[in-house]
Image 1 (cartoon, rainbow, N blue to C red):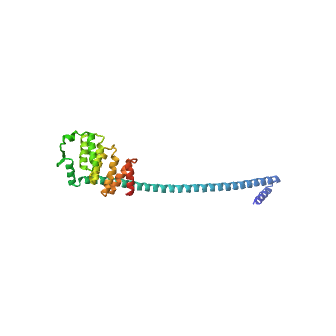
Image 2: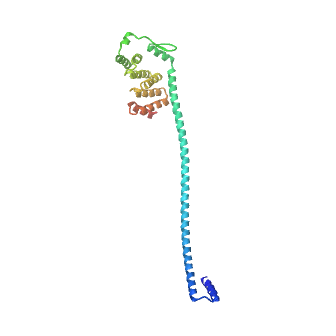
Image 3: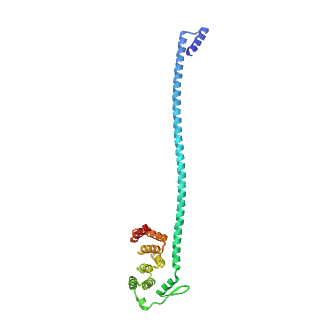
Length: 270
């Protein structure tokens, strides 16, 4: 094509009568320079196109990676949302069950308190109480009973307890609590009252008396023992659910106590 164009130009110049050898050489040089420049331009364009294609490919790959990551994050978000909903449901269910267990526990205790009127009447007689429709009136004590000191009254009552005379022991311990409510032995006296009923296998009454130790002497040293005996009393009544609840409470609140060790062993057996 180069020579065709050159020929035409030469022919045209000859026809015009003004073409020279120098003009022809100059024209050839220009044509050669144009071809070289065109070749370089084509090569540069190819390289540029190749780089552009690689860049576009890289962008597409990164875009795909971002899409995949976005999809994974979205899936993780949905999964976490589902797990949170399940966890929330389990927490609500646990709260409800705990509330029901606590309500059932106190309901059973209240029911136990109302059981067996004959037993209650007998206990009132043992303690020299006169039963009345509205309240319990204490009979006047003898001068010898009133003359006993706090320590003497506790000692005599404990001796009666150790001898198995639970009626006399309860009477003495209740008298001590009534006359010396701030006594250092008051919580012990209340505990032995509960223990006397436990020894007689009157577990319902024992549970209520142990509860007085827990509520009225929360800082006393007999609280762990009262919780332990409460748990065992419920076991003897066949109520494993409340027994397990109380024993676990003992372990949680007094983990280093000897009673907690006994409770832990018993819980493994249930």
